[in-house]
Image (cartoon, rainbow, N blue to C red; front, side, top):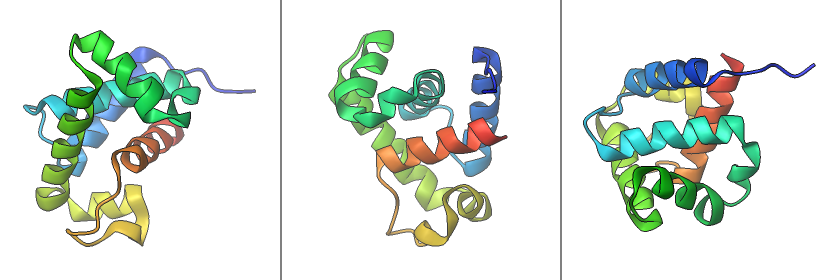
Length: 120
């Protein structure tokens, strides 16, 4: 039997996780990333093509373009990767991305966050 996730639970868990990892709530990319996790948890097929399905959906919700969504998320990841909580990053992303220069792609970050939120 598959577990049901409420919008509130997903947003609460993803907010806690993003802040713990070191994402800056004041950045637009943080809000877009949180929404990407929510949408992907509720509709996993969105992860099949992030640029074709997920970014346009988020852009529609925030009345912006998919290019702005992608850029803002990338910027937010860059900031968190440079200044974030390394121990928490290692827990969520594993040893694959331990250096400041070798950060995961937007899609890899979204997938890891979705997986972590759904497990916890």
